Image (cartoon, rainbow, N blue to C red; front, top):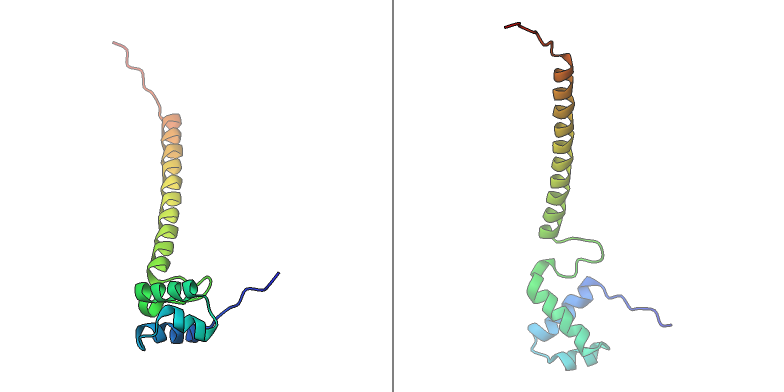
Length: 107
């Protein structure tokens, strides 16, 4: 089984530059670099979509993804805190009921 090739960010940016800046066709640039045309096409599309944030590498999130992750964690924390408060007020209400003294006033 052949090992998957990994390309550096600089190599990908140079390959994309051949297509976008130097007006090479995707097929021609891919052939010169020893790549498949569809791979170079994906790189070009990613670069057009993400710009400077393209080719971040595995596990590195874009700023939007990082903010989304942070907000989801914050929501989870707030929901847990709310549940704790709900339980605490329920326990407090039960304690109040238990400690209330009922006074009987005859009519």
